[in-house]
Amino acid sequence: MAVTLIVCLITSNFFVPRLWQVAGLPLQLSGAVLLFPVSYILNDCITEVYGYRKARFVIWLAFALSAFVALMAQFVCWLPEPLQDGSKPVAESFNGLFAMVPKTTAASLVAFLVGSTVNAWIMSRMKARSGGKLFGVRAILSSVGGELADSLIFFPVVFWGVMPLGAVVSLALTQVCAKVLYEIVILPVTAWFVRRTKRAEGVDVIDRGISYNPFKISDIQ
Image (cartoon, one colour):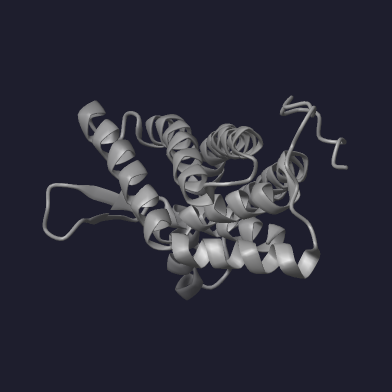
């Protein structure tokens, strides 16, 4: 699950600049909406099965690897131009796409860190209070909190000055609604996967008396 979450986060950073219109409506979504919600679904699964401390570790691991990819993309964009004229348009297209990666990744990293931590915190606290019941309710409410925090950080940073403020706010809120709807539709599969993982692993952690300090990364017991 951790590997899939990290791949979804890194890949979605490449899809962010591609906006598309929603079914002929005056609404836009980022291409990342097709993949990024999976990272929050997996965050729910990890928190539900293994607890907040494991989820916190995976969040920071995803953060570090995403930063590494963004840094390498920037280094490649700084490389000298190719010798052959025919290769120059390819290099320019590559640079045009990946030049945005550091910016989108920087925004994504902060947004993901905050949003995923909020998501895991809500999921963990609600599980402890409900005694492990109401997974569907907890998954949806934690996703609403996490996705809202994520989008309200990410989209203003990436599109500020590129799009009108009203369009940025509309894009952020539309993105939240689309991601949460995505997670509601896939909820039966998520619940089945969680039950199967708990049985296979023999693990079902309910967090009690733990530290919710997001920077206490070494505490993964």
